[in-house]
Length: 119
Image (cartoon, rainbow, N blue to C red; front, side):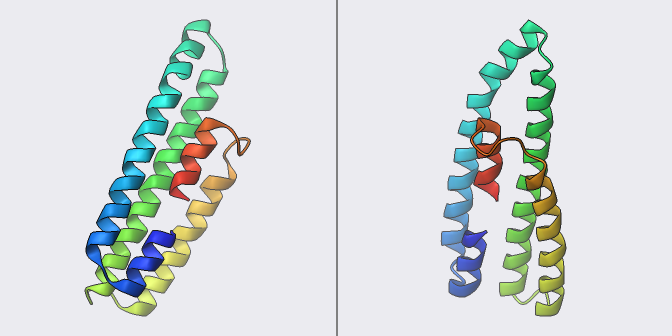
């Protein structure tokens, strides 16, 4: 979210896109890192596989919300969205994001780290 705040202040689209690409690359790496242990859990018949799958689902939702905030910020800076509307939308999205982040497991868990990248 600090990337979006920096963008709103600087209005530098290239910095926003660069930061977004960096986060997406990091997210992809973390997702790949989780995939191997998850497949092992699945072959072992562990119920932990279901928990990891649920965390990845939550993570995808957090990612979508963060990307939505970035799009809203771009619209605000471009003058396509009123400031009051942006603030209201940001509060709603932030609340949803916090709810999702609150559902994640222990903060040191790789899946939780994946979610933190988007928080």
